[in-house]
Image 1 (cartoon, rainbow, N blue to C red):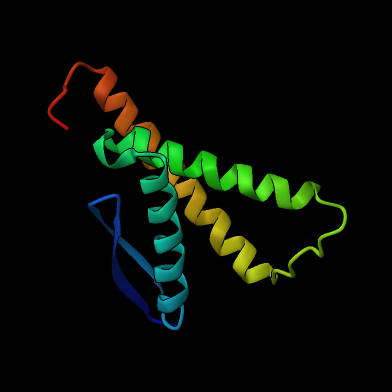
Image 2: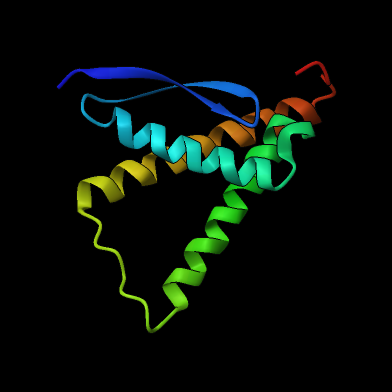
Length: 110
């Protein structure tokens, strides 16, 4: 199955991502969710790694609250979606770590 390329806008920054055909609307929706969290954190003025970190922390906190709520039904997530999301989070984590290493190396032009 061929892939698609998307551009997500998060806190005023554009990110190119690829996904499988048919996942475009879902990935775009997830990007909007991250954008909302980033903007809520005031991340528009932050560096890219910090902005992504704050958005990820806010989403993780929300997910943690949902998991801990005993009276809420747990959303069903098929294995393919779980694997796709896991790979995306891993990819974003690696990108954040690479940017942080680049910034720590003394090059503040990024």
